[in-house]
Image 1 (cartoon, rainbow, N blue to C red):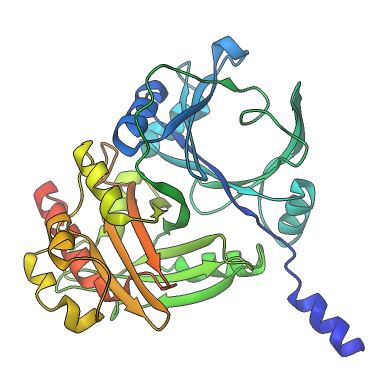
Image 2: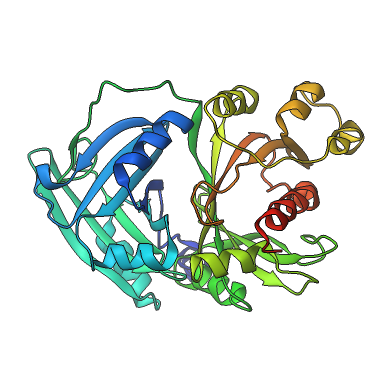
Length: 373
């Protein structure tokens, strides 16, 4: 019995996560960014906070699609911490908020294991109830905020009011955050893997070295960390030696340090989603047409028409549990940093290892155009 109890204690998920609650991006112009994500990606208006709601230092717009919530925040005065973040990093992800049942316990468990506190537990309330939030620092200036909203029925969080403009373009079929990739510096991947394992109770799903993720010119290494129920997955990338500057080095140069490289969002029909996004002006990386010449030989039979995937530039990979389809946007910010991945899983739980070479060659072509390869 003692052995069983010890086993149960060791395997208990001390940081149960229900999923991604929201992603907060610091941006130069929150209103225009909200318009962009509505128009280009099909996000719907949800909530607003600013001068009209009592905030004096910032303005935020919240947009939603499926289970994905983006908070777009800009400073209202010069010399602010948000402005300093923008000056160093440009537009990018500041907060990865995680939905929990107990934000106080999440803070205690992670800080007790060595996390640097970002936000002490705080109770925030309005007429719709209350939430608890707390937070810790992670790589670079990125932070995790734990959100407990069991006793809240408002539109988003206390301090936000419903945002209901006339302009509401149709959605594009995006459902939830599949995974989120962080770029860290040289020799920093393993320490951050240890952080997610030891501080947050994550486990390593898979790893890729420079033999897996390399081209003639550049290389990187990556390890994928997942929480206990698999709802939150964080691949972590670091540079590897190559003949030329890798995409990770380019990111670190322009972002000014480690940060979120891309957000992978899931759809149930990647063909329809990509066609809608493309028609709205979203630009994607392209691969040579020859990629599709032997696709069936590599992947086997799939439900989608190869000619359609070729016309859209959608990539396909298979693992022992099924296959996936994926495509990557060009950077959505002025700096070549943050981009989005659109992914549809048809059984596969992997991350497209078979597409790495084609993808990174596509990124290298973009780097060459920018003069940063």
